[in-house]
Length: 284
Length: 284
Image (cartoon, rainbow over all chains, first blue to last red):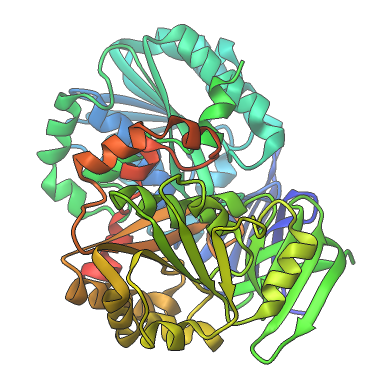
């Protein structure tokens, strides 16, 4: 029997990845962080048995959680990332020349450590614009700070330490921490996993209550449960589908050349939701 | 160890589905057709160990291979389905009131038999508009017939009996079998499975050589390899993104209410390709 990693999202149904060996394993105060060398996806990080990223597919998640927000904001300078310890989201954010400072608030140092050791192409940790704070993201944002232009919530599933990232109270703190034209994005799970529907619905109800503009968008991430992934954007002023957003994307030719998933057409198209996905957030 | 079905698309990486029992198994002259009762996807049909459909996710594939073409054609009356023995594509096609006759050319009677027995909600086999021909689809189209308005190639992967469905010669026969405003759609595999890239490239090069309009589009199918699936449309006259196509979709309110994935926004958005997918068909 070959060595395999299994993540079951519905009883015995899920993803199987062929493994070569275990490279990293640390049970921290928060969670079990592991890295495997896989057969065809490069190195793979899991937290408490859930896939976080592989070297081969991480670009989809990191591009889509970053660039939708960064292009929506007219001049993003100060960015907050909650979670995101692997560094991939910060890497994408710092491709925008307007960005002056990124605070990354990661609760678990082991995630950064594992990424630095086994995902050399993912993080841009030496970039002087990046400051890493090893703190609880919810406590950090509750305490207040200088306002941010963009907040990206790059946490794991709504179980364990990331559970609070799906609560309205948390999004209220985020709203307060954003500048007057601030934009927020967050990952909101697989529409195919029925047990997450209440969490998804709760997030979009909260964003709709708090922000004048809020929308779901999707992308296709092969190693995440059922492959289709939802994300949310909420904005105080600028619409992600406005003409000025489109103009900013068109002007970013050099940045776009570095990307493998996101492009101007994908930016708009990602907001078109399959009917069954739309129903999760729209049905009363 | 629980009973599980595994489909590996990259070495030991792939999909795992929890099974309750085997319901149907027939080795035909062409392939091994099996149906399992699964833990959370309803019944599941596999051919030679590759997932064809589950009761829970079949709507994505069947809606997307049918309605993009049927709405693109101004008045689709005569339809040819090559393959499609489970009946789901014919069911979607026959929702269009303009459709008068559907020929479904399925090489393997066992697929229809398995569907009738174990997928009662998938096929609309008693519909008098549907004629099933148990023949080789390539030979059928080569022999010529009255012209079709729409041809849908609903075959399996480019190995085994479906291999010829990825050849230019086959698409030339399809072109000849289409009326002057004819439209064709075909499934073209997972962009994440590198070994299929040459087949994908070959299909789109052939369609581009033969038809004035040809485009790739995608949809997200949870039980297919890596979840993101590509399809192709080729048209002699009407552009799938034209205003008249959009008007026809807007006028189809009652039909759209029966669908769970396809909707007017998805129609257009499905043509926006992630950059790495576009590169598969555009790179020289």
